[in-house]
Image (tube, rainbow, N blue to C red; front, side, top):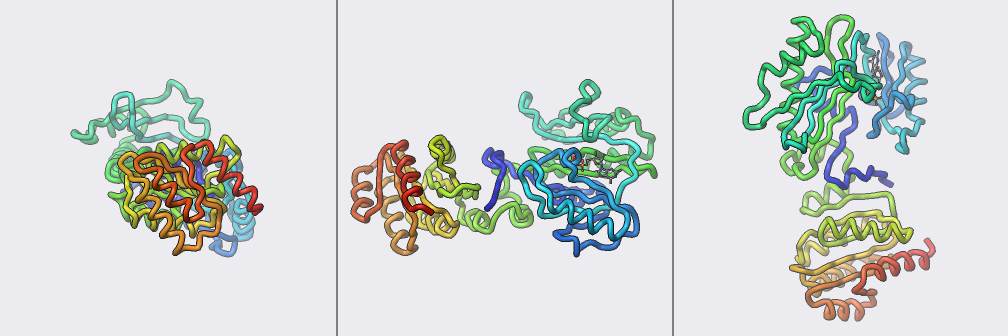
Length: 381
Ligand code: GDP
Ligand code: MN
């Protein structure tokens, strides 16, 4: 089962470090040399000290013991298998990043995010980055970037001064900042963050960590990001292609509703009664029978133990939706309890049509949620 952090529902795609570093590389932010491993057998005998890093979506891996060092082949294999057996903030570690261990002299923090109070992207720098960055109050600098003007060269220069860098390092930070800005802007990011941005003993500036959050609503502009970042399940990718919002969660009740707000309210209503949503499927404003069919077809393949369809018809005609449900059900052998809450234009007709097919149809959401949870308990699975 997929255990997706809830913030996904707020419309952002949080990349793991390795995915973020892929983007860093593409846009020209220097990263350490390294590779991904899913088992200790994939460890390449190191020729220099390495760092092994748990690939999970939660931050604070360092403090949780998910960042470890190894020098010999034996150590590296042992460390990789140790980290792969960890669970960090509820997330099992399935992959590790094995990288050259940087010889770090100083650690900086550098990010770009949206400052909603002024409606502009904002660069945030902290001269002492690293794991204690939250405690560095007062030692920060910020710059806003007007998107019509773009990143101005003086910002990079000022950043070099703020970090107290020499001229060679300052040239590096200017190049990193402009690469980071292009990444933020061109990929429609909500956040790009380097913490720590390491200054190595031999004078290189390297992104030791990467945190990138993409705006979910802009993903249609980046089809390559949708397929290359495996956070999305095969069913979610399929749904994307037919224009449905489909999110797999960790419960067992599939929820189809029209409109994201209604879908979330339905998940909440189930949760209050002890039910757990397993799929979030938003039909949007459609009453297209083919779309309803496609939605149910996706759901029928997602191993749900019960299905709740919640339609609040405004523009959507309830009888059209009912027709789609009936036709698909006949084709799909959906052999789990199905409850339909249907309200709006032609609701009586829709309820009659469904009842005639033996599908429980209700007008009240509370009753419908109770019914689907009851059905689940009775089916005893
Ligand atoms: P986070 O705790 O999840 O943010 O993971 P990071 O990748 O930021 O690593 C946490 C800390 O581990 C960093 O602040 C560094 O102090 C340390 N660290 C990570 N990579 C290296 C490395 O290559 N060399 C050294 N010396 N320290 C590292
Ligand atoms: Mn970090």
